[in-house]
Image 1 (tube, rainbow, N blue to C red):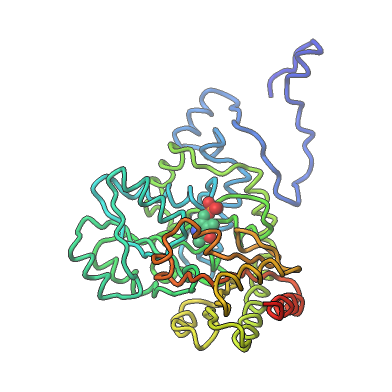
Image 2: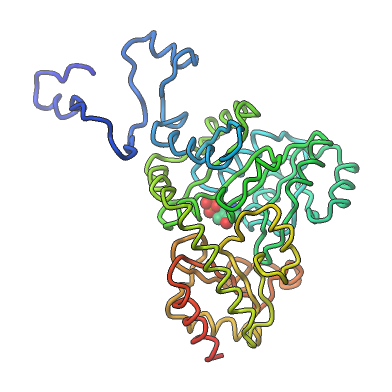
Length: 400
Ligand SMILES: *Cc1c(COP(=O)(O)O)cnc(C)c1O
């Protein structure tokens, strides 16, 4: 701490001396862009990694690093794997940063057609233009995966999302990771829908996990951020370098909000899981509902796989309503308890009509091929009393 100066105006400028309180019970919010050094030598030692310490908040910050490390530990919880985590400014920046770190022009990505919309666009519009071509295939079909790898030695990364929007189709992560290892290919999984409470891809052999923490990990819908998690020293340096140079770091305030959300992650996920099952069962028995997609239902084509690789079936349900577009819109507009909003994973129940929102600009034939029909509705089941959610749906269904 430098001297404050003798004059009022200098005193205003200087940071006041820390009053040296006892250890804070809750994580402090370090709103500082840089960290000061006691001497030039200390600066050199920290910059060269000889001593630990913070330098500049784009490189790392105590609030951000504490939360990133907690997420990394949760992702490999129950195993003896040591993991690293980096928080990013959004889920999209977690995806772009990990791909920038692992790929170069001429490489290819093998992935699926039913990814989060932004991810598909990122691969086509940004990575495609930079010479990293995405190949879209059905990752559920392992013969197809092997054939693609045999025909395209340029594939360096397999990128998967399971369960995938909106039909909740699942990909066998253990099998994909085995095939990838046999072919010297790295694997990245978007685990946003599950969180480590329901699924731990790294324990199944996957190299890297990304999340949009905006969703369940924060859970309260008040921040946008993401995280990249991997095994310690396994491309850790490359990922950190990409993050640092692309400047895709998270900010301390969003990290702090995630930290608050994480405290109730287990209790929230447990309730999301049980509420979603209750709502899926209710919908499944309703005569105006023609189809329900939920991995917890024995009728779901991937129920057995989900049971094998997931510890809970999650909070996302989608269903098709009788009467197509007109009924779907009337249904949504009649709801009084559930909220129409284009996000998921919040504590309250959110509904979305993909055909008129997230997939409005997607060709009708293409979206129907991916299970997004005019009558499809997606519901992110919250942690309220399930009777209130069911009552609201019931009231709306009576009116269509
Ligand atoms: C929301 C979402 C993303 C993108 O995350 P942002 O935080 O909005 O950037 C990526 N993948 C999935 C599965 C998502 O739901």
